[in-house]
Image (cartoon, rainbow, N blue to C red; front, side, top):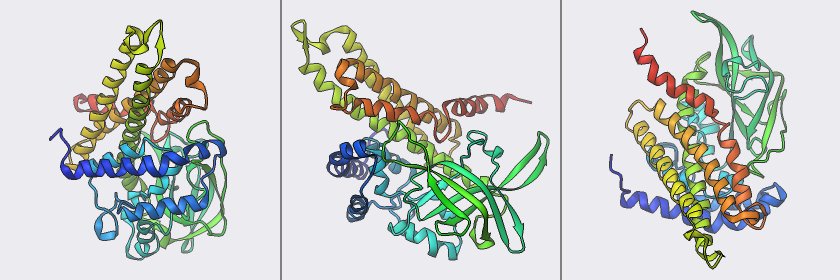
Length: 386
């Protein structure tokens, strides 16, 4: 593995960072105050992302995407992590799960998503089924040629602006040596489908303006043509998606931590106490040393995991390690930045309280820290089990 960035990769980093600084930063305070992204601003961000050639950069070129590999895409997400989640959503990275679309579905969902004409949202979590995905109660039963769906999903990110949804639903059961398990199927659900409703979600302390919603299904009929992939094989495509999203979380955590750290360094030089810069006090200088070491470690752990995934190497444990370490590192770094700034660190005049609040959810979504530790330990122990 080459530890240096190629000329093209450095261009990716510079382009995306410039975009975030010029197009995202100026609007962050407004979104934080109001909890909303104005519709006209959202469309403006979509168009500006198209203009620089980065919209759907994670999808293959043959379907209208940018064709970036896993490592290059991790670099994109790392730079986007510096900015507001509510705003960088419109940079446009449709779910890679859509690559499982058949020919007709590609025309209705994949291609419009790649062009920024339709937004997707992915729905798996339920009130009683978070980490235990197979515990989902939202179910579908076959009735003639339609699947009739009943149940709810919640914590569905940016569902408020989505035109269609990629929904995982229980469609049956199977007997296994460990007991009965539910069979899961993935469906494409249009926002206007009868019997389907998008309801307001919960107010979160993390990522203001990045809405979560509740999806309600009441005798909602979905034709077989709405199945993404194969019946009862939803986990086959879900697993490939989980790999990518966990790297995304890790990468964005690294980007956000670097922004917090880089914003703190000048303060350590400029702020004077007892006749000298506070950065000269061991209590502060050691904090800086620990923070940059942790940020760099999380960065390389994340890029290494993305590299392994791109090369087709086993990466389950490495991705879990990256997601675990980077998300917990971000909490520690934002907390230390607040400590260094003292009381002002908690004031809205500075961004650190926001970074601190936003950091909290990263240890929960896309697999909790506990789930990541389970994946890591399982990867270590299974090869030794008889």
